[in-house]
Image (cartoon, rainbow, N blue to C red):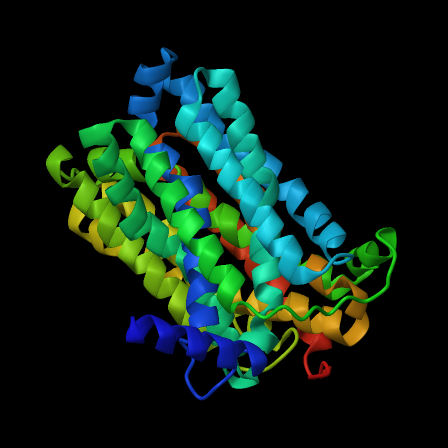
Length: 415
């Protein structure tokens, strides 16, 4: 009981103080990271329990698999629209309301009697998930010090990687033992606990700027934003050309025995988590467009490694090492692009901060859709061996786009 009272008093002090202190991992920060973990778990777990859902609802696995693509297509446009709308309302109340919608969507998933109801539930979750990430980003100045800003961005994005590495295997195991609906029951219980913690701990102050809904979209006329969005789209597409087919690549190109594929996916997931965390370190090198501009050589290295993935067909050991290296590069631009969006908005479009916070999620999901589609065409026409070289083209495009940021380097955004 004493521990609970102590935690509550710490939370209260954190709230009154804006949640900031000498430590980075304060209660508000941990809660926002855990929120992104829950969003990632709900989004990715369908892949792990896909056969169970198909069997339970009496539909084909392809039909259930379509939920993944549909989720991304809804997520991308709803994220900027929802973020622009949310800027007009008190942040704390809006965040908790959208978390309530997220909970409702997962409750529908748990009790869905048929595929159409499950589809509606997934659409509901997709419609608010990106906006929730965007609003979480706006808490940064209120829950941590400015020196930890890029670390905060990196850890919020890392919540999705942690969900992929840790959450999805646990969710899959629960589905295997108790049935797929219990996976969503677990998500719902954790979300209720999260909501209670949010209500107690998160700061209630808002930063509402009176600006029209359409006026916020002037942000999209800024060339720095254009280049930042394109860099993320091309960077994500470069990885998802091959990542969509990661399991068959491990099995057929690297010749990893079937029983070790799950372990291979976990290793790749750990590499992706490390990628997200090191992305925060890279984003500390400057402000505005500078961190993303500095990554032009990272995109070039990514292109070279992707092109050499074709050699995995003939040198499986090299292919296995290469996949880990590609995982380490997969998210290196995440924090730098987020810094670009938020600093440009703070400098030139202060009424569009929520919208700016949403652009990374929107751009990444567009890249996922493009990369997956191109990967499908390349796989059908050229085969798995050539997915890496095709992805390298997108990585080179990302490098060219980041080089175009050169004229804007040195334009210091306001703090």
